[in-house]
Image (cartoon, rainbow, N blue to C red; front, side):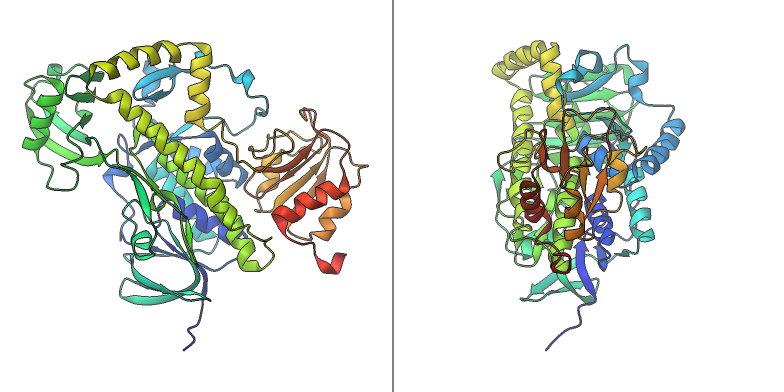
Length: 512
């Protein structure tokens, strides 16, 4: 029996990853349905202080290239004004990030070492809360024609050679593809038979908002203790880790009495809590799907990889998955994708995820309540306070060092494209708004102009000089903003054509 296939892609999960992926697929005019278990997208945990997230350079660039950065920044400014500004403004030096709570600062970072970055509207780091980010992405998704059904989480599915039948919210829907963006406890991952491997937790983490009988009982700031670690901001915001092997996470209700007991043990004080206003737990369990695709089912975001929230890498990792997957899945559905293009989603993103999981594990090692960890912490503090150290940690935390292994060629290949300021008055980032690739030709008399006609509609061709072209003569940029080919000598048409075929399939036969 043949079912109708009204949706090209069904996405499980209306968090930031699912919403960004939906927006990417709509750029290719695909039919997209997003299914979300929660009936109401609002949650106190998505607002300040617990909802704050740091966006990395690749995430900020992605939002800028799709014309969403200003909307998100405006929403965040409104929230910052309401909460009397950002916390770092009261500090003598501007923090740039941390590693296991060890701060590094903007004035220590040498950005001149990042030779393939150019100044532009997209900076290297930005703070945003989850509510503002989700609201902006949902508004863009709905405006572009995405259907979002809330209160309709995926319950089960069956896949065949030509589609996926999904049961959600008591109904049955059909799609050609299903993407699980449904978080760390992903139903899609579990029902889809994906192998999920990694390391067990060492601690239970707590993020709580409390009322304290004597707020002066605790010292503000982050403190390592013989039994764990806690961070305190007055009047009552506390994050702490209890090295119990993750025993308490989601096993029983978080009560005021329990939080008080753990806080007393971790802080070594007799602090008394008079009220528990908000509480959530988390662990440092770090696991990753061995593959991100099984037939017509794919995973992205926390469904594909989970780790502790230390350093705020998880959101950026998931949004990077969405940007990498969107154009590849769209080309596959359109029928013009080159061989193995969709397979490159996993081969490019899996190593990035594995590296972030290890980055998280390294921070846990530094936080353990042991003399060896405190000795290692002292060394890291010395290193992170140097220019080279701060620059290295900024590269990793901000995502500046991200580079896909796309084989040999120019050192820019596999990196995020520089935001060239072109003589025609445009910036490179603005030329990627439509979700197509870009062939940027700095030598208009070169033999590359004809390529855009051959690959009609799959990438745009722009011939223009630039204020600073970093010594390049031509650059082929993928739809996700990463460089697929570049040359700093006279462009070779055949070499450029091979690069175009690698990322955009065979040329349009009608143009041959």
